[in-house]
Image (cartoon, rainbow, N blue to C red; front, side):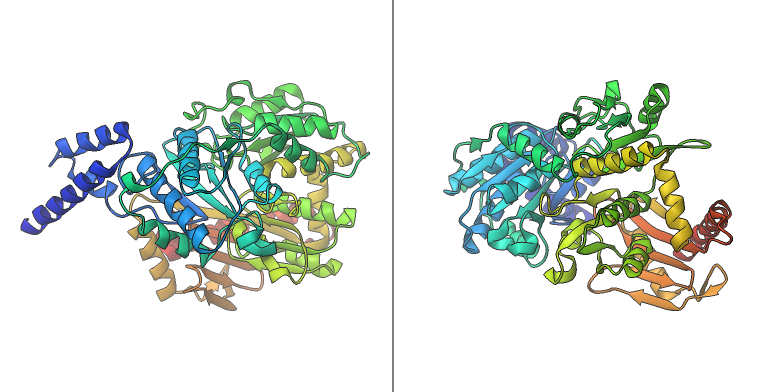
Length: 554
């Protein structure tokens, strides 16, 4: 009990010091209320001070709340000061470009970042309004910026926000120009953030130069150039931005490319930080696209497309014999890759260790270079180390890069345009995306993928499961011997199991409190019967899912 009291006293002292340095009156009042509620509020106070947010997938992400273990003005001021100091220490001289989405606090955090930059004598360029993340990634390259900051939590719950960092060519080199940061830059920035002194001593300047709409117009024009001119454009598309910032830019891009204006889900069309019609603003989540499918059905749409709230991901739904269904990220990925290959686009095609192995098979058969990376677009866009120019990359989590020289990151707008181009071309032939998937299955076999995803409140459960699979690695999967078991520690917390016809990849999520297992079964097609092969593969994956959950103890 004495130890608990001592710990509480220590946390209370840290909280009082933090409160005295916090520049936001609302956050100070919030934290003061927690302190005044002690000892009943001790667990909440301990959580807020469990540790500072650390750089994960290219930056910070966490709940909007006062204290170091949350997203708030104090944390953003410290992060901006550390980033600006690190850029100066590296000799970077260009401007910092800053974008933001429509979540709570995003604009305030973006303007504070600009103030910190100008206060340190660095030019700061602010995008003109809440915009998709790909526009920021484009702007970093277009403006020759030393770095970029995007204030967004992407598809996280409404109570979260985040802070993504990109490097320009000056410090990121050719492969990293406009790409998310990777080691050792992340560790260097993290160290610089921890070295920031009292926030009252961080000089603040004006909130930078607000860019005009020409930057958005430039992005749209370059996005349209991704498509060859003159192809079929007759396509009825239903669309939702899921209360995010994608609608205006996607509509402008579709119109400029010559497509009919997509029909937009009315009550999801405008940005809304509360995301009132979805329980979780991620198109992968059950129920998230129900309104989109209803719109597609009622309007007789050929295709349904969803962006996540910051429009860097793209989800696609198609009409089938049993109604509408969402295509898996792997299905959209191989459709896009195949489409580019048929267009004659040569160069490096890349995906990640958790994505389907079908892209590898396609590249092998067609004599095209292929690479596989750790999860995350910060790795995909650096695939191959520059030996071959990257022309396409994707990850199964609905992320696609169809034009790396336009946006060196996942881009849900250009992906949507390219999917629409493919669908319109097939429609002109009386065919569909499903028909093309069947062609690929007949040629390469059915590559059925699925995911086991377990959300936890206690992160120790994830660590326990990873330790369990390492200590008792299954000897068989689906009755076949495991021919290869890879443990990627210390490079990555990933375990990979393979048999001749199946694969399981197990890893903690990099952005959410989840444990994920990525499952794949490859089933050959006999006598051209793709449907029978799909049924066999689906049954096998269901069994593999059960076996994997048992092995993980979850």
